[in-house]
Length: 326
Image (cartoon, rainbow, N blue to C red; front, side, top):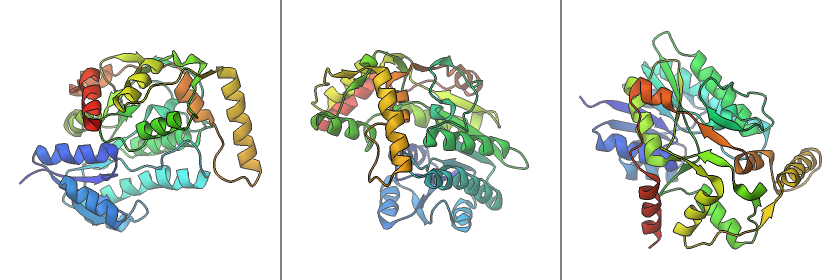
């Protein structure tokens, strides 16, 4: 019998690549799908669609029954929104996946986390997994992902092994969010570097994320969190310039001083929280943090404990992106 996996978030950027990899490796895959469109996407990747969403524990338990491993990728993303949406999508949603795994008899759950869970406005320099979670971060995404990770790791035991895999700045062919958004911002004249953009950052190609997830399914130590990154750190401005170039877009030179950006973000968030204003603030704290702070990570725990190593280099990933637009 082939191994079987249950996947949430399978219609997304990372989820689609994960399903591709699992199917290629001979796994039988079932994937949660909350709409006809999502069901079509996961089916195209080779998974059996399970209709339902993160609020439907019974549907997830039915979908996960008979599976060895559950990969939980679905999340409420974004740098702005209502607190209850982040709480429902990230914290309660993760608790529901844990409960579904227990009901279904799944023995291992791999939760896709993020370095944002340890981010609260401070630089991270060669940070490892001892960096504390930030459940009270002023960025809703960071706070909710920190609380989600804490509850997933606390659930380890009583027949369910839980593991967290944390990539940073996921990039590569198939990205429908980050790179397209940056391209649109440049073309509309709304893009500017914060503080010159010369800070250093870790990055993780989508195929390297998938490699970490697949290896963690067998080799990770239960109850542990793991960073996974590419082999190198990069200068943020240089890397974004390279990404934009793959889409035929020249990066602008305009820059905003970091103190000004922080003040604009804080003021905007205050106004949008207290006044009946439509849309979103022009700038948020979270965007300022990820666009101006050193964020370099040490993934040696993953390399040491389950043999993680990147399978795609930066040069290969950029060439693939450029080829996709040729």
